[in-house]
Image 1 (cartoon, rainbow, N blue to C red):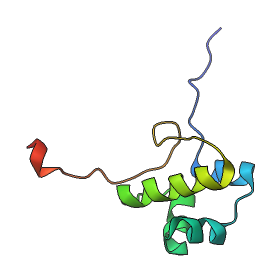
Image 2: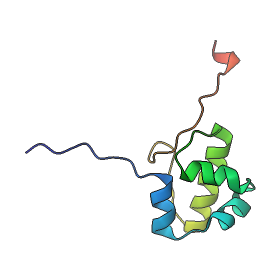
Image 3: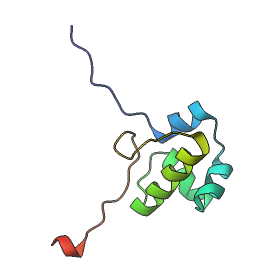
Image 4: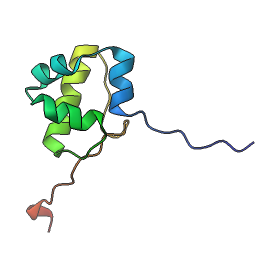
Length: 83
């Protein structure tokens, strides 16, 4: 029987599941609450912000999520060394 492919959870879904407040996440990640809000809304953010916020989330919740495991849009950086 055909089954739709599994979808990655959004950061919003993870935050709800673990009960982490936006302000606590902003403080722990040292990012402005607007950055956290953008992530929760699924807006694209800088890679450094995505890494920092996800790292803080993992610390607060005792989890080990990676950017590859969740739906968290971030801007790809152009590395001049790889050109």
